[in-house]
Length: 406
Image (tube, rainbow, N blue to C red; front, side):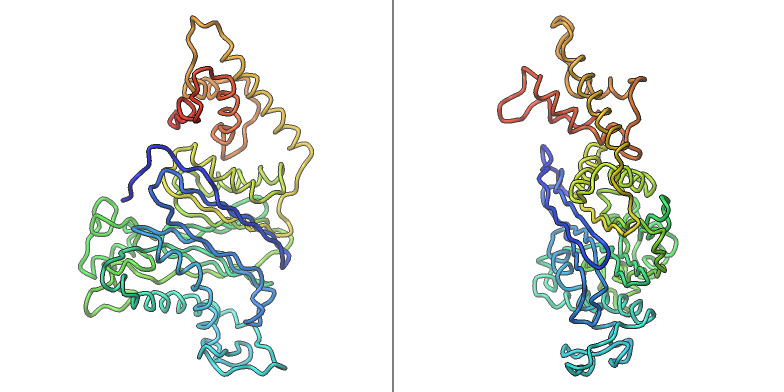
């Protein structure tokens, strides 16, 4: 179930890019976990596959180790493309390749993008193939490494979103400022998942497979995939993804968010989309927006690794002068309120950060806080003022500023 640190690791890994009419940013943070087990993929354009105007993004949430998540982040896409080509028959309208997925197209005839049904079939087959391939790794086969990973992602063509998920990482699509689509988590308590688990001789206890694993579908986790007489999708834990096709609406689609359960544990679909939308009106730095998401989730109480990928489409919210002004006013108000609380006579006693946060949370004069993020989304600003004025703060940065529960 994972071990925890005495204090969270808040250093972040960031990445961003732009192309194919979209831009993306990502952020990942280890947080309270002893190890960082998340991984991600972000690819703009797939020219070698004849899909230069397609893009691919995914988040992998590893557990019991990072090997499966890291391997999938590097190789799942190639399995999906190869399987999509085969589903097209290996010819044009799904060309082939030198990887054995079909005949090599001539240099004068580049491969054509696969058809919609072939893409969906290719995603499913790609998952099954990479799962079977990893089973051959000696440390995974011999039980020296028992890691597994969820996966959630989107393959974008000029006309479609192909969403896929395996486990409890989640994708959402924001269209016209509303959650238009969301993948559904694969949890052992879901009736369909429970039935498969029980048919494979397992049980669901404390909402976990055999009382241990919190997800019912994942890549890896081979200890749960060794029931004789059952196929790969009939095991206690299945590697089969759910695949959903959504037609793009260029004038209405705003952004896609992919995130692991470290994000969704403390934010609902609507809260996260509202928060992202509000931050995009303040900043066009997508890395900074993603950093705001993981920081806010940390301050909301997430104890897991956290990873988020934000893919902005042409109709995404743009920076608004009015939103920037209101956000700056809110920051100034919070700074002045913290300064006021810390300037009271010494006999009152110097308040700890938890007390400051609780007092602010009941402040009736507070300007409007970011939707979905609330006061937690301003924790860094509040903490910076507190640390600057705290006469008892230790030089190494440890002390009252490390209180996270309020």
